[in-house]
Each structure stands twice: as C-alpha cells, then as structure tokens.
Image 1 (tube, one colour):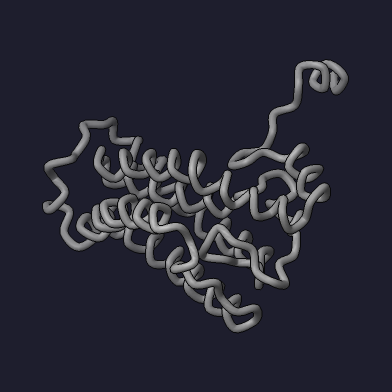
Image 2 (cartoon, rainbow, N blue to C red):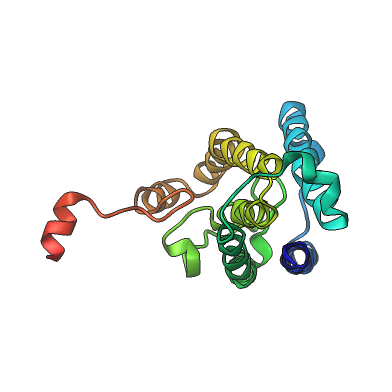
Length: 202
C-alpha cells in the first residue's frame, strides 16, 4: 500500500516540476548545466543517481530494496504519507510563485527577478526544502534507510555546496537588495524569532 502512495506522490511532484520548468524555459530560456563547474556537475550526479535510483527501485518492486528496510513502528510510514501529501501542493505553489525564474543551475537568468512573495517571504530556498521533504517522505513510507540516508546527503550537499554558490550569484545580481532579503529570511526553514522578540510578543 505505501508503495502506491510513494509512487503517486513522486509522479505528481515530478509532473508539476516538469511542467513548470518547461514553462519557465519557454518564457525565459534555460542556462545549460554545462556552464557549471565540472565538480558541481559530478556532485549532482553522485547524489542524484542513488537517490532517484533507490526511489525508482522501491516503487518498481519493494523487494529490490528490502535489504535496506528499517524496523519502525506502524505509524512512521503514515508520517511519510502525510508529508508526501503536503509536498505536492507545496511544490505547485513554490514553482508557480517562482515562475520564469526557475533555473536548473546555480546561475541567474538575464531577466531574473528577486522573488520575495509566497513561501519566499519566509524562506529563500523553499524549492530545495520541498524536494528534500519529498524524498524523506518516500523514505519514511518505504521505511528504508538507504533512501533516507541519501536524502540527508542531498540536504548536506544543497546546504553546504549549492546554496552558497547560488546565493553568491544572487548577491552579484541584486546586491544590497538581496543582502537585506537574506538578513530577514531563513535558508531552508523560516527564521525563529529571537528571545527578545518572543518576550515582546508576550
């Protein structure tokens, strides 16, 4: 049963991403991945192959990934289902707000705009948050440590490698406007209010 939930969530998310990225390419073109440094391209492949491969193997035949099964309480896969159901409309919202600014590289497009509405009001990179959450949800549905492990590896790669390079490009493009925006938002999750702000709200 959880296999079918995972398949539905994965295909729905993939369909939304493909359709919105196709629209963005038509509206504002695309930056070839070949322009990125070879090391970054190799890193993407290194992370993507086992992550997507593990998910594909699980939804094709769960027995192929049984070697990485986890013994978890029966409610854990249901947490994955809930997360997965939440991810699908979230990705639609994020990609709709981002519009033609969607880029498959760390570079900004010639007509790139600084988006600060919708989820971008609180988080600078909600698309990465949504993508990581998608794979975590599938890993929980599958109760599979291999998928969860590579979801964590993807999170670390995004946080430590991709985001710094992407934000350097955004600072170069938008200057002080992006610096101010960065100061008031979280990278992957909303900023928590400071103790002083919490006391003031009370």
